[in-house]
Length: 319
Image (cartoon, rainbow, N blue to C red):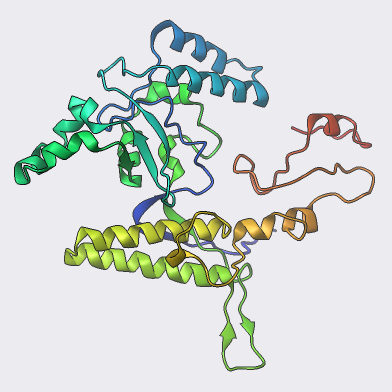
């Protein structure tokens, strides 16, 4: 007989945020970063060659990883998009900012980018002289979503981002956050004072819900874009801290006053769930290895080196 242990509700956010820990998985390099194109930068015979290697049934993890690096390296050599002629620069993390992505390409070098500022220049003529000084173009999660939505279906296979539940690059953007059951974040009754002490995850969820409601209220009342942008940035940081509370580079006004145990801290390390409760000890029929959270593995999977898996005392077949 089967019974449902806990129902996990899902909270819908008012604005998109990037999934923390997935920076390297986002396929910015192989794509044209122009928001109206988003085409693959390799075409013709080179694209067909890579596609034949991708669909090979005997392609293991290491070969797929090396092949993906070759595709990204080949695309980075292409500066002009073969479809629209847009000049692409380097997409990287913003220096001095938290969880920001920029396209390092001067606006003045692309006539298509200048066209995006036509209406703003008509309203303020002084902006025309400043366009050539812009060295970076900021990508918001909405810009990234629009770019990913324009990816053609035949290019998704070459991007090599499909993995089990993730079928499209836009799945790397967070729109909903799972709320764990109470048994994961129990309240502690305090003997010294009245009331209860809530878990760190519960407190972080409270902050996310508060910011989400503030953004919804600002959008409804037509508040200034600066207020919405500030709450949006803070929501991005709080969602990242919800997953990993040890991210670096936070400004002083966003740093936590006390240590918070997020999901990453509960899983990794010597006192974490993997090494403390799930991994094998110094006994027979078990493989010991350095275990850390991996976004490419399910929660019920553990990565073991091939050599260790083949010399286990008990000949159990593993995948």
